[in-house]
Length: 447
Image (cartoon, rainbow, N blue to C red):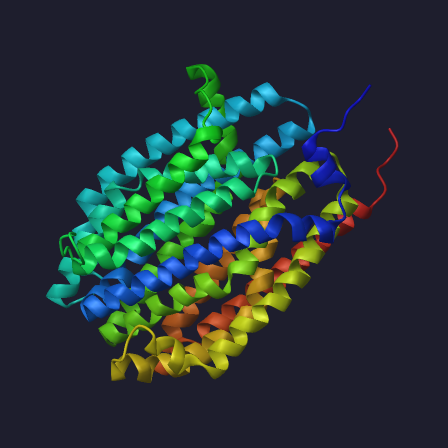
């Protein structure tokens, strides 16, 4: 008697809208708490020092590199495990999970060693204030060397999500973020028995929260590492599936660094505005990022079963949901930019630069749904080349050159590069997705 697996009942049989409504809220809630942590972290650091807030903006691209390799490795694990579940190859899926944990340890060791050597030189390319340089190096060293927690948590979270368990990762990320929020003021300002550590306290709070989340998902997400020969094979497969995400996030780091260098030519306040934008972006993009996380295992599972009609419906449904949610971000950026910026900085220069910048950038939110969702679609079905092309188009071929060219006219014009690049990349993504879907709809030639 054949029994359906939990993955089959959830990923293959459930109504698409019911499926997304069921699995997306836990992911979105966890990301909401994470985004609130990022905002609150910036608030406390901003209260401590304006240079400290600039330092966080400078280190943010480095944290994106950490995210790129940690989550990218987890994405590879996620896609492969979902496909193996669809083929009832459970022992091999455990091997993939074990290899992912080993890769997390290796990449953390390499990354932390490189950061110690290269971080000071990087910081000096982005800011000029001695105090901001000192804060950035201090904070950066702590979050880089202490990043083992996020490397492990990212892989073990994807192990759970590959099987449809979104609740435990949600709980772990909420616990980590709340712990982070509580420790921030205690360690930054030295409340009660805690020492006043300043910017170092913010870094330590971040690391402690990440390790707490890793412990919670590791209790049931950790798997035994495979034998060396199998590890090499599994590692190659993981990066084959995950390198598109790694490249996408790494390119994000590259363009933020380049934009920071361009903006530093105008003022440190312009650098701060860009950093504040990305803090708020992480908050308003929660529905989009949550749907991206949820559809990867679902698309991968159904693609392995060659249920192309369901894959198409998953993509279109998730885009429609994301467009509705993104309306909140557009309205806030267009009508409340001063209030948003004032939460973290009362500096007149930051407000003068930031208010028109936020209004222009807000126009990019709707096309960003297409430019960000379509690469994930191709990544989930294993078509990495279109995914990489879309990421390169959005972040390198469009944003950087357009931003630089407009900077020659003046600082206020640079922000137009955001909606322009999102429209170009989003349009290309639509074209490529339509072409892929039409290929699926063509009849298979008889042998």
